[in-house]
Length: 325
Length: 112
Image (cartoon, rainbow over all chains, first blue to last red; front, side):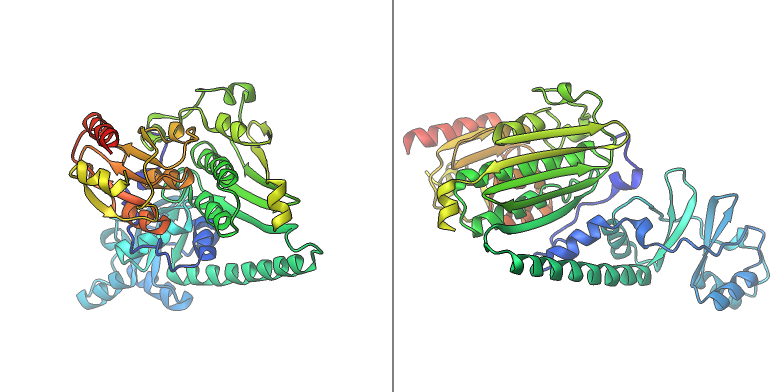
């Protein structure tokens, strides 16, 4: 797990009372996994330096209507002055002293490429009003509060609603109602083992509801699951999309890097770049792509190093079933 | 033999009763490597593993397993119990080690 940010590793797993409640709409769960902290945070920062008096922070808070001001020098994040620090300074009569002496330095921070689900869990676990956000170079790049999250989710929900409405219009317009059953895309985040596999489980459940033959369902589910796990384990993040049309199921995994150097090698039994941490989850045996090829009627893979990889698996549905539906 | 009967033979604790509790076990797979489990094409599989993670249940769901027995007395994360409920997978916990659990299941299947 050496290449993981520390906070990813130390986080407890979600329990049943977290965001995994079955009653929560899938669309919302997908959204909080797809959105990154950087998509939601405020990046126009109001900051002060260590030598700034607390009174200056108080004025900034009043003028900008904010409740926390980061202390930063040359991109280095040094601390945070919150409204509680200011209240204490007013009560204690030291409002003209500098931030250096009274700022909070024991801080919990978020990283800008974490999924929004992490941020939500932080708010639940730590009960802070805001979290500073740093990038991989440990530079302060933003601040996130619950208001930012609400705003972003409302916007995304509106977009998702528009998308679903257009999909519905598309399906209504299709002459043969079963020509296009489903067209969905699931985001998959790097190393997000908490959620990896959910898309494949969902795909299987939909196919069972539609009463597809069990053997076909098994092949589709295995291909989807292997590709989803591959995205989680090997990519920098990507998406798993699937559609049923013209009697065939098409599953496509697309990612934005790092790309596969040697495709032939990667598609052979037992070859894998997975580390021990990944193996501890039961994966990384180098059988993923081999297994997808095994269950698929058509298999395509293309990859460019530093650009990304696209894998397509197609499984034909029984012709008899096509007639029945 | 059903998975609940297997649990009784192993003196194991049934944590979640899933959708396939009435199905007879037709095959047993004992592995901690989910990649290997996904290669199995058999039906009505009982999965024995010492891996206590959500991915075990997600894998079991993908292959249509009748259920999962987590061996070695591993403590199960709360999320695992919730995933078992969500996916309708029977989840059982046994204090036996994997080898002994395999032998016990094998004997039980032979006498069934």
